[in-house]
Length: 327
Ligand code: UT7
Image (cartoon, rainbow, N blue to C red; front, side, top):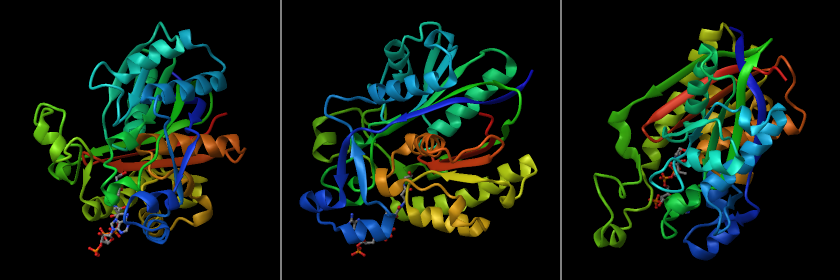
């Protein structure tokens, strides 16, 4: 059994750009507050008719083309998302149909913002065991529809988008280490309370706006800074690597202050850190594969580069891996 690596990558962000100045028009907020507190300048919003599976399918087709295979070759599709098209069926099944991956099994994986990290870690195990030759892992969100337009605390932070990767065997490089983590005792810090078995939809839910995301930003912030450092160090240790050996760090894009604090703790210079939050805000499970695709398309990613990707979010969860780029 060979190593498992990334054979193809693709992404898609919707065209509609919403600036901080646009936010000023609908909320008691300011460009200055959003920029200095979060690093966000603008974000993308899906078109009214676009769903998460639409964004995911575009990113998936690009990744499959990049891998040089056809949709029928895919054995398994895993979509990491917090904003599925519907409560069920799985968005991954809708993607399977949209891209014509008729031989693929498909399921969603709900792990907060690290959804794509979790999906990719799971998918890589299936390739490693030989159960599937090609696994398509996607992080896709129309997360802005889960946000309350009247809540300045959350509405300004998020954006929509999708990123996808095709996993398969590689001759050189590939994944060197993984780590996944969860602490469910902190679950209440970031929730979308209604619409599940705990709080089914009702008039009261709508009146209290419990069908939208609720977040304790300060607690999520503390968890994130701690985890970004802790779990990144763990995956470097497992891979026998030091920060100097890593060419690119791609952290989840939730807040530039979380990224800066985490990277400072690890002693990582800014030039090695990929930042897209200024353009896209927090696109939840899509943020890392979008950022990966951007540096790849810009020609910054070279064969042999070690890339560390790390994420944190609702659950609370965190996850990271190191992959040696093999394309
Ligand atoms: O993907 C994972 C999920 N999310 C995250 O990782 C988010 C983690 N948390 C954060 O990024 C930050 O906690 C926030 C950006 C959400 C908030 O930043 P903060 O520096 O922790 O702000 P704060 O909660 O301490 O609030 C400071 C002030 C408050 O006003 P008072 O009480 O000091 O008068 C807020 O009401 O800022 C106010 N505020 C705003 N002001 C203008 C909160 N949101 C806004 C806003 N515009 N949009």
